[in-house]
Length: 492
Ligand SMILES: Cc1cc2nc3c(=O)[nH]c(=O)nc-3n(C[C@H](O)[C@H](O)[C@H](O)COP(=O)(O)OP(=O)(O)OC[C@H]3O[C@@H](n4cnc5c(N)ncnc54)[C@H](O)[C@@H]3O)c2cc1C
Ligand code: SF4
Image (cartoon, rainbow, N blue to C red):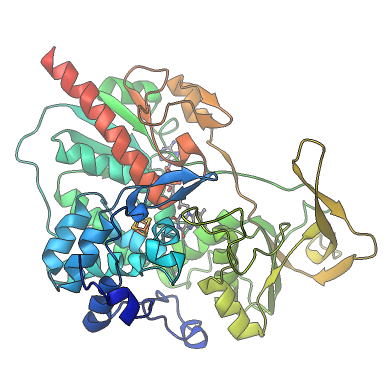
């Protein structure tokens, strides 16, 4: 282990973040990295506790506790403390294909189960992870690993989000010839279009794609499987297929005035903003502009927060974020003890920025949309709400009861719906003949086989909207199963 007394001597530090007011004038990443000296101290805080829950990835209370890809955290913490960066990088790359993504935007379930966090703030695992890989790229240690031998087997990966990329990477390294199909104009899935540049610089995504191309992976963009090429053609041309198409069917809300102009799904807003930024630095005008408008985002998750950050940067007149759930407690309640993922109140980069610009945290809790009132052109003008209280029905299911007399009218010309995703988009799956269950591809976790021979599934399309780290986990797992399937074919 690192320094035996490190966790007593040093306090937790997060990677430096640019001042919220300053960073609002640009679209660059809001966080940067640690100095080497601080990193060594942060690595030294790891206790090497003997039973490191941080890398277990167990599901406790329905959420991941510990790292879902089983990163060897205590090992690289120790190496960072000793300044042995190249070895830390080697150790990190054994389990994580893309630490530059998770090191920036993972919610870090590893930190919630860190043993230090029982009595002190957790080790800064995520920040250390990011620093190791960023240093690797900076020093030229991350170079193309071109497979020496090819098996002659061909695999199509449909979708280039983190699950598709992880699957493609693993299968390519195993010697199979991999082609990734992507319907968008740029590969990366939600890493590219979804998560804003402020959180994850698109140059970081492009750098990885370029490396994968140099390693021999083909990317075919602007090509929707099921439309531009049929499922039958794919099946004929490839020995195996991995479906990594995400779970992009947006969940809608029903309320009076839903059809008003100015109401958009969050993903349309976020995708257009990033595309316009990358294509023309917003000069093309192909984005939803909230400048000078009152913006309301409905839905309190990552997607909602990303809408807040985007509208705040666009100089919206006001930004509010509505969520129906109550505010989380400041500290762990008794039924949510370590090492479970801590369900506590957090302040994200977006909340912090909105507070800096508008003088208050944008979140409103226990609030429900009743109707949207329009002007004479059918454009949204006002949003009417009512406060609710949480109750339980006779089966213990959480319900929300309206509180009479708490009605409120909010000015709103732009409203973004960010209440999650229902599941996979069906048309292409019907062509493949792949079965679904609860709007997810029906494939067992760990096996990833669908009802169609040679067709596998991974990521959000199989498990429902989740996290990048789970998408990487699933991409890796599915690749292992595909490799087993293909190499068995070779033996025949
Ligand atoms: C706005 C937003 C912010 C998020 N922020 C975070 C975060 O901060 N941290 C985190 O861990 N997770 C975050 N998530 C969740 C995370 O991004 C997803 O869980 C993850 O990207 C899922 O990866 P995936 O590969 O399964 O699917 P996706 O990333 O959705 O990729 C699927 C790809 O398949 C393509 N595709 C679909 N159908 C076809 C077809 N027929 N032909 C060709 N291509 C097709 C799509 O265009 C897409 O590029 C966020 C999600 C959203 C929506
Ligand atoms: S991938 Fe996420 S859970 Fe795993 S070590 Fe990194 S930050 Fe922690």
